[in-house]
Image (cartoon, rainbow, N blue to C red; front, side):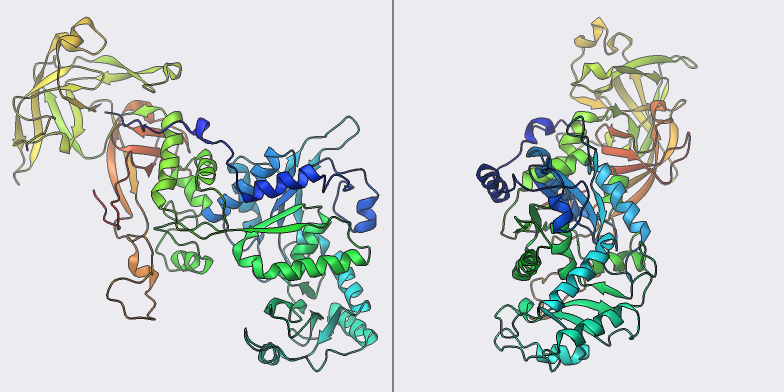
Length: 615
């Protein structure tokens, strides 16, 4: 039988919830804070910005990934938040690659991020707002601003707000101070403007090796916030960049580049996770200094922090994800067990499920741990509404209807979705020999067992009522064939069907028409809610290896017998296999006429509280 979740539909649940970021945006809009901003149609410094017309976007947000890896579930929350807010308030959301580190970034990651954002259903392209306006393509790269960032850095030097430091990294670290002790000024802090400018320009020309000098902001080495103790803003890197090639020998630090990128792009609300809260004072300090020099227009972007996504039964640390891939615990970044978006797509998680999940978990400033079952419930809710039903037998046992005419066959009609008649019906071939699930027969039934056993009546779904007459065994004593007789007047959809009341309802496929297919039964990658976390009896201070918590049963591959309507299923097509769960045609390993199926999620949560898995 089908399991239809009792929860309301995804469409009715995906209503924008009120949270503190929405409150900030609505207050800014009511006050007209950003109403007089100018927008030239492309990012640029203050004079260029002010030369354009008023910004057609009421707000601007951004999703700014660094292209040094594949996106994970936490990024999905940020994507849904930033793009969703822009949609809701008549704004624009920019997709910007924070590609300031040439040693870790690759075009492969750029392409995968673009694909993931599109897959989630969002776009950075905006149509023209009027007859004379131009459409916006808000896809940007931090590396395209390197020229302006150098210009801004030279302004900071000229205005006395930056200097070149020639200490080693170890010496800088030793003078930085602690949370309770102030830092110590660098011996190079009072270099003249001319000397600093000369050194910085020679750094740009590649005259010095990596690490010989850094450019630092001159703020306050005694500040209670360590991030204001003259942070580095430029370092020497003789490395080729995926976008700019060998043009640059100096690269900006992320904490310097990011606020400038926001300001150049007219970002109104720069939304990030809580770990950047301590960096906000520097974010504001830098933008204020540049605005004072007329290099940026006001109002300046506002940084707002929210809590990152924390889910049970997964790890989102990039370091740990790399370990899982490099050490072969998974088959790659798109392994359906990994919490990457490419893995989720291959597993069959619908993008609408992530959008629903983002609304359900909400936005707050407090860290919390979300149970993975909430994510799975959101996926089930969407899939239940959208996926057609099919029959598949994954642990086959032969059923022979002895009184059905040999060589005869017929069709049974089955609804593609029990609650959506508009999805139509399909024909299923029926014959004398069928495949049924092995656990649908018990030779000696337990109490309360209502499926097939000697003498009992059950209905074959969409077909006939049958009575079990016995079974055969193989040499090991295992049941190999079940025998039964059918009631000819009991076919579903005929007047006689209602005359036979039975408690058991079995799914099946006709042996002569079914085809064999590989089915991968995916489960959670980790067997405990907090991989690597402390357990009762662990010594204090001892960190456990998260890899010790890998679930040995996270994937099981079986050969199933599937109804013929599934043979031509296309990659990424999703189905509910009745009684088994939701499945998707694998987008990598499937071939024409030979689809491979991945289990997306079971019909019900099979994980008990505390990590015990019920099979």
